Length: 398
Image 1: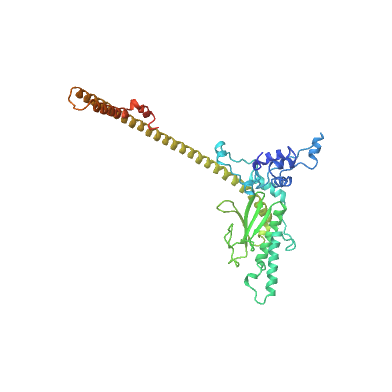
Image 2: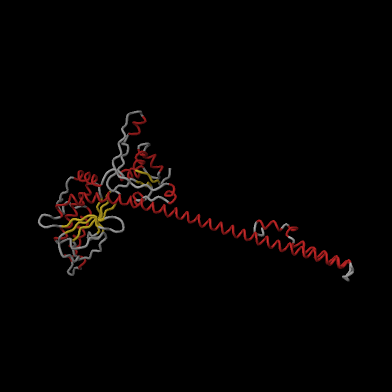
C-alpha cells in the first residue's frame, strides 16, 4: 500500500478495524500516534485497548459504528498529505479521464444540520470577563496590559504603546467575541485571531475555515480587513458577519445591533450555530466547485486529446502526401534517366555503325575505348540496371 493514499472516511474506518493500529500505520509511513490523530481529526473511532487480544482469544468484541461526518468535515482523507490535501483532494488528469466526475449528494439537508448543531449547543452564555477569557482573547489583553505598563512607566509614551481595547466599544467587542469563541471551542471548533487588533477572525469548523468579522455597523464588512489603528466609525453599534468562502468573500449572513434590548448579545446562540453551519455550507460549495471543475477539466482534456489526434492525423496526411510526391518525383526522374541512357546507347550504336562504314577515321582501340566509356555512362544513369528504380517506392534515397 502507498504511503500517500487518498480514501474516504468509511474506507479508513474499515481499515482501522481490520488490523492493529501500529501495523496499519506502518503501511502509511506513520506512527500509531500519527494514525490516531488522523482518526481523531476525522471523527473515526478506533478499537479500544485490548480489542485485538480479545479477538485473538476468540472472545466476542463489538465494533463501534462510524459516526456521521461533522459539519465542515471532509469525507476525503489523504494520509501522508497536507491539511490542504485532506480537504481539497484533486484528482490527477488521468484519473479524471478514466472515470466520469460524480456530483456530491448529501443525505442531510442544511436545515437538518442546523437543527442538530442547535440541539448540541443548546445555549450560549456570556462568560465572566476578563476572568474567563478565551486564550486567543487573553493574549490580546495581556499585550494591552504590557502596553499600559510601558506607557505609565514612560514620561514620553509613544502613540503605538496605547492599549487597543480600553474604550467601551472595544471592550464590548471583545466580550461578544469571547462568548462566541468560548461556545465554539466547547463545540469542538477552533477560533483564531490574526493581528493584534483582532480584525482578522476565523473559525476552523473541522476541516473548513470560516472567516468572520465583528466591527462597527458603519464599517463595510471585509473578509480580510486593513483596519487602521483608529477606525473612523460613526456608530458604536456592532455588526457580526459570516463570510462565504471562495474568491468573492461575500457576506453569507450578518447581525446588527438594533434598538433597545435587540442587541447582538441576544443572538449569540444563533451566531454560533450559523458559524458552524456555514462551515458545512462552505464544504458543500467546495465539493460542488470541485465537481464542476472536474467536469470542465475533462471537457478540456477530451478536447485537447481530439486536437492532438487531429493534428497527428494532419501531420500523417502531410507526411504521406510528401512521400507520394517524392515517389512521383523519383519515378519521373528515373524515367528521364532511362530515356537518357537509351539515347546514349543509341548514339553509341550509331557511331559504331558509322565507324564500321569507314565514316569515322579513328583506330579500333580508340573507338572501343570511347564505346566502353560511353556505355558505362549509360549504365551508370540507367535506373533499371542499377536497381535504382525500386527506390522510388520509398520516395527517398535510402
